[in-house]
Length: 79
Image (cartoon, rainbow, N blue to C red):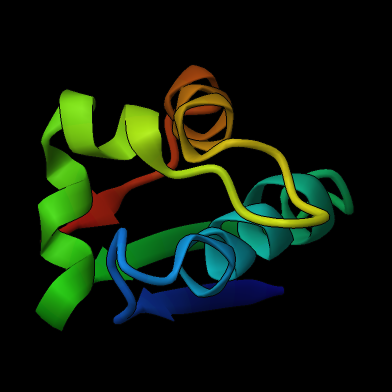
């Protein structure tokens, strides 16, 4: 299965920003699906490592960990 995740929430809502990344990295990817992520709107600020490093939602891994996992598995992240 191929899934494209859209992230539109930025650092102002850390949980909302992390959820699509979490589902992509720890859900679909681990299930063996082919995934890609699109950062749009406020989520484009997560391209900056310093900003992504600050994003720690409730009940989900930190964005920096999620991006690292996506990077390790060569998941395309489009802006």
